[in-house]
Amino acid sequence: MSYKSDTTPRYHAKDLAKYIAEKNHCPLVLGSATPDIETYYEAKETKKMNLYVLTKRANQAMLPTIEVVDLRQELALGNKSMISFKLQEEIQKNLTNQKQTILFLNRRGYSTFLMCRDCGHVFQCKNCNISLTYHKFENKLKCHYCGFEQKIPSVCEACGSSKVKYFGTGTQKLEEEVQKIFPTASTIRMDIDTVTKKDSHEEILNRFKNEKIDFLIGTQMVVKGHHFPNVTLVGVIAADGILNLEDFRAPEKTFQTLVQVAGRSGREEAGRVVIQTYNPDHYAIIHSQTQDYERFYKTEIPLRKMLKYPPFCDIILIKFQGTNIYELQKVARNSI
Image (cartoon, rainbow, N blue to C red; front, side, top):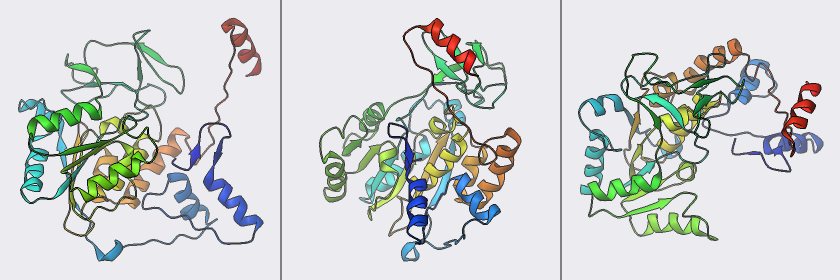
């Protein structure tokens, strides 16, 4: 999705690359550790392109060890902090050994969802199996795919618990939490609020690397492509923030993001990753722990087929816009 533009002019760089390659009779190479499901299906099933698989990491480096922490158990143990006991323990090891840590918390593109803190159940659309989005003004849960809506429940429909709450937090709050638990450690934050100036993105990354700052706290910006030899620990604060987006691709995005952010750890030394989640049994979490793309694909593709999602169909968004809502509704109804 990084190659897709949702603003005018709307385009997908991958499609443009295909067009240019065809017109100029040259080969096109698409490379990713976590290819999107549609592209992988095209390569694997339709044979429209050749598939080559790299089985080793660059420089023969070992993959980091990944541990999943169940936040439901943390809550049961009385830990209300954003940082689990296990992650705190691993952070302390890094501080003692003068190694660096990246803490990832997805915030950009975030949509509030409703979750039970006892069992981890997330309220989903009865038709689309997609997380319902909380609309504060109307005080309702809505599906952004089919329009299904329901009132805000007072108890969990799965276990009956009253500990139902809106899920979400931010990187600024996380930074405050880190400074509270580890007061002598240095931190730097990279998110939409801290990269507003020209070249501030590179400035933050260079400072983290050259000044040996203990923590880099950030959103999607810290996930891809960075090489920090001294980073040996990555903490994913809330994997559920991606997993429960109102998008059928949420499991795919979760798997991709977790594998990519895990790749920032242990570039030259043995690395560790701690993933915190309320849904440790979800297949996207399980397969990201082993970084097994093939098993994730084999789990995801039959679900896509059953629910008639891409690559088994195309989804088209038709948008109507106007100043008169009644006239707009009339035009929309006549157009369908």
